[in-house]
Image (cartoon, rainbow over all chains, first blue to last red; front, side, top):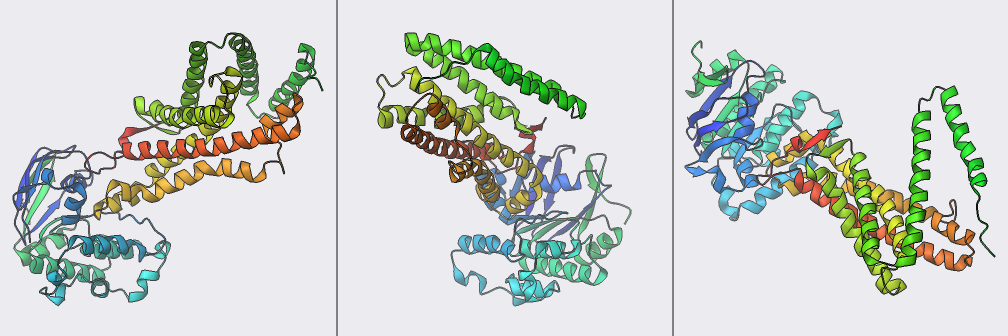
Length: 228
Length: 265
C-alpha cells in the first residue's frame, strides 16, 4: 500500500502537474489522443527525462534506484513489448526479481488468496489456461497480449499501478475480468491506481463504484473532469 | 626468385578492366560508374602516396613520423566506421566510440605482436609496424562497424522490447543484453568465416603478397596465421569495447533508453 504524490512533475508537452493519489484510490485521466496522457504516465515511471518530483509515501523518487522504482510503480503501456519467442520466458525475469527482492518467504502468507499474484492464479482470472506459457508470441492477438502484459505487471507486486488504456482492445467479457482483477488488486493491496482511459462509460462506471476522481488533460493542463 | 617490377604500362592494362566495368555500368544503367571511377582513382592516389611515404619512412625510422602515419591511419579508420552507421551517436560519440575501440584493440595487439611475438628491434621498425597495423585496422574496422550498426539499428527498432523490460524493473544492462549479444556475434562472423575458409577457397592477401615477393611459402603461411589470429583478437576486443561503450551511451543514469542520442543519416 502506498500513496503517490506528483509535485510539479513536468513531462515534455505538459504544464507542471501537482496531484495526490492516496493509497487505494482510483484516478482516471482522459483527453484527446496526443494530449499527453501516455507522456504523463511515462514521466511518472521515469521512462522519459522529466522535471519535477514524484514521491511514494513521502519518499522521493530520486532516492530510489530506477529499476526498483519501476517495480514499485508499475506502468502498463498501451502497446506491450515482448522480447522472447515464448510467452513463458517473459514471466521468468519478473518472478525472479520478486523472489530476490522479498527477503522473507512468509511475506506472502498473510495475503488474501483472492488477489494472489501467483502466476497460475493471475492467468486463470484473466481467462487463460496454464498452457498459455508455451504459446508463441507471434500467435497472440492484441487483446491476449494486453491481458498477458497485465499479468506480467501484477506478478511484480507493484504498489502503484499506472494503466495506459489497459482494456482498450478487449471484448466485453475479458474487459470485465480485467477490470475486476484490477479493482480487487487496488482494494486489497491498497494500491494507488492512475488509469488513462478514453472510454467515458468505463470511467464513469468504475469511478462511481470506487469513489474515484476523474481528470482531463486540456491544452497541456490537468484539470478535474466536470461533464460526468 | 626476384620480384618482377610492374611498369606503368602494365598497370594501365589492369586499369582498363576498371574502365570496362564503368562502361558496362553505364550501358546497363547501373548508375554506379561515377563511384567506381572515383573509388579507383582514390585507391590509385592513396596507394601511390603510401608507397612514397613508406619509402621515406623506411629510410629514416623516425619514431615521430611513424607515429604520425599510424595516427592518420587510425583517424581515417575511425571515420570509416562512423560513415558506415545508418544511425550514429550524436556529437563526438559518433566518431569517438569507433576510433577509441580501434585504438585500444589494434594498437595494443600490434605492439604485443612486435615486441613479444616477432621481437623486432626497435619495435616500431616501420617495415613491420605499418603493414601489420594496416591489416589489423582494416579488418577490425569491418567488425566494429558491423557490430555498432547492429546495436544502434536493433535498439532503434526494438524500443518496445527494451522498455518493456525496463518497466518490469530490469537494469539497463539486462534490458539490452540480448541485443548486445546479437550485435557482437554479427561483428565476429566475418573473421570467423575468413579463418574457416582460409587456404581452401581464398589465398589471403598477405600470404599472396609474400609469395609473389619470393618468400618461402611456409614462411608466408606462418605470417598469415599470425596476422589472422591478431585480427581475430583485435576484432573481438574492439567490438566488445565498442558495444560496451555504445550500449552504455544508449541509457542514462536513471536507466532510461535515450534514443534521441542517435541520429539517422
